[in-house]
Image 1 (cartoon, one colour):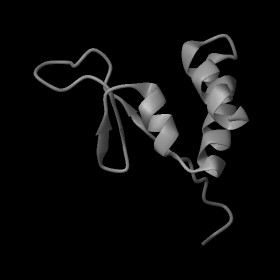
Image 2 (image 1 turned 45 degrees about the horizontal axis):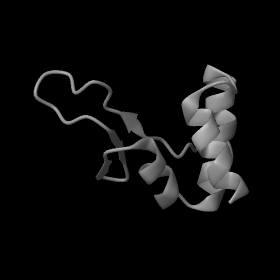
Image 3 (image 1 turned 180 degrees about the horizontal axis):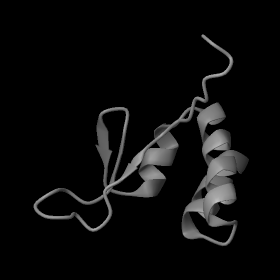
Image 4 (image 1 turned 90 degrees about the vertical axis):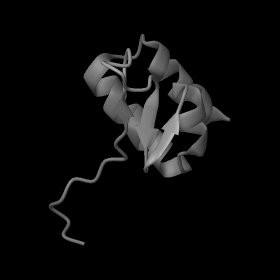
Length: 74
């Protein structure tokens, strides 16, 4: 793999279920009702990378950052 390619364990936040769509989160072609259930399925390395990315983007004082931090410490 080319080292210049940025890899990110991306997920989709389906938010409020715009239109007729489902609410929740999607990662790896799987649908999760809660953010915590999605984080539990992430590999440890992806949890840490997602936490760092999320803190840079949204800050440390968010519910998602807290869920990711607990998952990393567990």
